[in-house]
Amino acid sequence: MNLQQLRYVITVAKYGTFREAARQLYMAQSSLSSSIKDLEEEYGIQIFERSKKGIEITKEGAMLLEFADQIVAQADQLDYRYLSATENRRLFSVSSQHYDFASEGFARLVSEKKEESLNFRFLETSTSKVMEDVRDAVSEVGFIYLNDFNGKVIKQYLEAFDLKFDPLIVFQPHVFLSEFHPLAKKERITQEELHPYPVISFDQSKNSTLQLMEESIQVDQNVQRISASDRATVLNLLSVTNGYLVGSGLLKSNTQDHIVVVPMDVDQKNTIGFIYSKVRPLSAISKRYMEIVRELLEGDQRIELTDHID
Image (cartoon, rainbow, N blue to C red; front, side, top):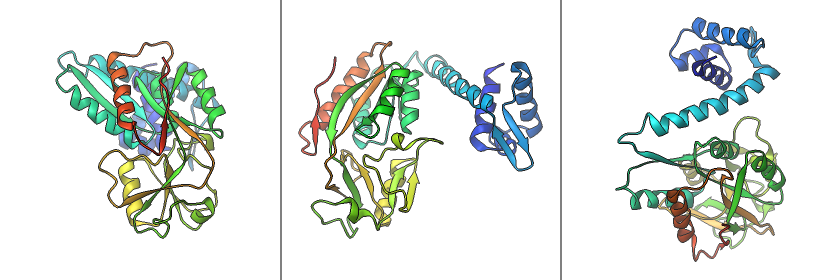
């Protein structure tokens, strides 16, 4: 077994066919198939079931894929730290659900520390990937949220991954809308009023449960859904459609042109917090980043800033 074979398995699982995976890897399909067959023979398992209709990953293959994701992520992290860096620069990395304040705080950190020997990386990704990134040391700090609906499931992940949840803010759900949306001028919005309109959401990883969605309220599953993986696309969708996004209501950067934020008429508290490893001590740069984020959020009337947990 070698790392390249594990990367091949991950790519085939991602794209669903050997043909497309080979195209993405810039290699012959026969070479890709042969390499994975060698891995299957080495471990005595079948990773993919092949048929004229395509491929499906087997139960054994799915288990191997979990290990492959972790091993490749850790190997990539070693490369980032020791091979890709220049002038012995260290890497500070953050993984987050799609929060404007997290990226704005990150930009302020980079500006403040631009003279230091550091490389910086900010990853906006799915809920499960945030937790996996911090577990695997791809990132030192992450952001997720908890509430009564998702809390039990998220806490199970955190416990299994040896991660600590450090509460940052408590917020009530808010609706992000275009300033031209029919509901944009309301003081508060009910869930019933949102029902005729499509919900815009951030795309999650394959097979994610409802508890891993980023929506802070449970949205009717029968309404039209539009999803995207990045904030820029979501903001564009909000600007040109009658869709809406449910979130914290916090916009701290200059991305809010033509977007309004209206509180929801629901009695529900949600807590956004930092996550980090229980077994790896936080670096000084991580602690400074967390301070900057707290300073950024101080005084915002839409949230309750929590006390830091040492």
